[in-house]
Length: 300
Ligand SMILES: [Zn+2]
Image (cartoon, rainbow, N blue to C red):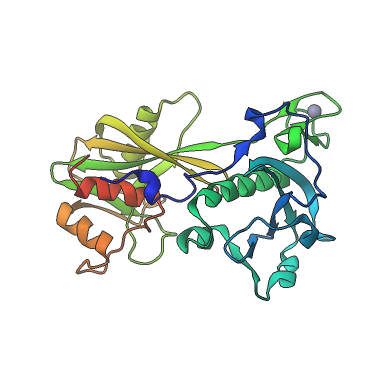
């Protein structure tokens, strides 16, 4: 089996985070020749050729909201900023263009190490856009530490960017595995079951609870396999293999449109785009694809 980082999106990251390299309040100058900027117009990221790291001068007059200092890449300070969706028009002509992050990942529009950096930028900007007020007292908060913290001037509370852990699991029973499709999936696609962890829950218990809630299948042993940042807006996917103890599936229609046991032959055909019923797998950049490949390889 290959290294998951060979195919998964957002797992390689060239960013040297400033939390690791210098005092948190020290932010380099933005208006310099060496600085680089990730500019997100609405939900579209500006690309110049095969990179999303543009010169700050290209964004003059467009930035709104908080400008974040992400860290360094190749010795250059890298910032992220948001602009209104209409600003994308300025970059519509070659050599620039705009593309949403999911498409950048599936099309490999930037190199894999830069994709991880873009995940940081998108999750951070989304967090700032939705957390402008203190959760403790309701006062407008102020960005600090290059944007990696917000502080409340009224009650002094500190607020930090959130990461939402999600378990995603391939449940195996004998030579079959359990895959389902949610009502929002694209037609014919089946994938691993998944769900958010709840407070006070272990990864293993979250796997068991989610699988039982969605399919009434009880789960025995759970093994952690690998993880993937999923910046829509700020999830961390925790990929697991799990042992299914029951055969009869009873789906919860509010969660799943369908769930079935698939054979290794089925899953291999899905991954190859050659399933006789036209059933498809998620793309190689997604962790479910990796777990399904591990199942076909006999590793789960
Ligand atoms: Zn407050």
